[in-house]
Length: 337
Image 1: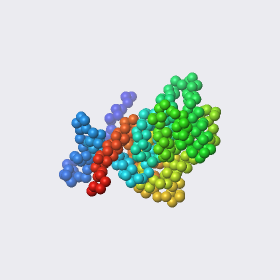
Image 2: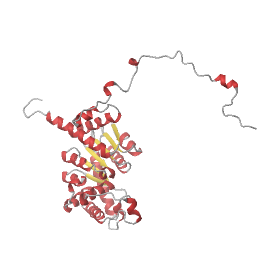
Image 3: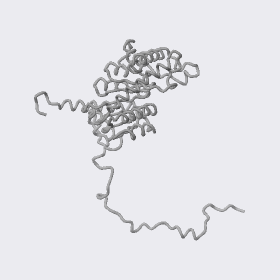
């Protein structure tokens, strides 16, 4: 017996589901319709030689084109109002070459504090001490050589003990150690720039995640105490973040979790975080950075998705251009504004 065709169905069904007659559909004119995109929102191509400020203003006033302006303006306003501006930095940001932009912000007074995970601090140290970082894990792993660099482990062993014993915390102790080490590439270190500027630099370690944890002379007790001091120091920073800006740069898990605990402590002690702007810049949107950074703690959350090595230089240039333009319009002493 032949199988029935899938298009065989009773004739009565053919007549019970006729295509809807669309005549009589109610319409209205375009002018009266609420819309999300307008002619003035469109991008404006710039000519060769345009400044970064002109290029930023030429971007479409939609989505990320609008958000990059908002981030620039929030950072500028917090700087002008002398509010806290904190950058929380994941390892990928440092190893993709974005440290110099953060260093420049530190030196200009644009950042009030730096928080790092362990990976970011490791990459930062290796760049300063050896001028290179980020090993080939796949190749090194099979030879038993992954994470076995001596100088990096020594630095964290010494910094952890000093940070614990002298109440410095891991970040400041690492900065102090690097200062004494006379690193040949010191200008590339965010940790050292923060130490020299005298601003908080905290390192938040998750045990077993970093290469230095494999070395026997790196004390877990000292590392734990030093990073706990840093956590408490960061809590003191977060308590002052009313109308400030928290920049989460490339940390998907550790720093969003650290931040939300510090926010809870700030509220527990009765500190207001009204007006707090939180910003997440990462290669992709992640659950913890979205919920623990952008949604739960903030008055305004802004997310910018893309490559750090492109977005951070653009943000840096956009802010530098705005600061320069405003400086040019500051009246001389004794003159009217």
